[in-house]
Length: 105
Image 1: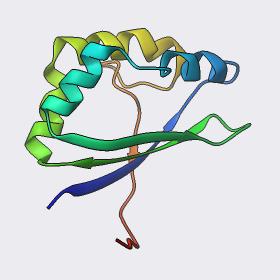
Image 2 (image 1 turned 90 degrees about the horizontal axis):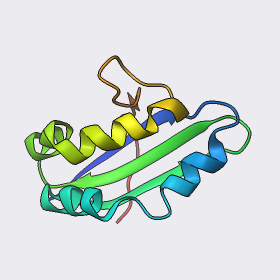
Image 3 (image 1 turned 120 degrees about the horizontal axis):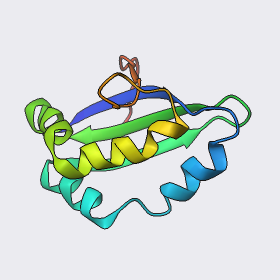
């Protein structure tokens, strides 16, 4: 059974178009790492005019999901995206995890 996760992130004002451009598509090597770590159905939606982004993803395992952060390509991606969005000291996106309230298969 897959684990569903959802979280909110924040793009800086005026950076929305560049944020979207960099995701069209994401780097192939990043996509490969995500898939290799059991990531499925990963989507990010942006709320117009607010900079808020909602992400939802299905993962196979929490430990494999967490391990993505230790990969070279993920660290490089974070560094490239840091000027565009709110980030933590390690340059990971500030992400507010959201608890699931409802799901229908």
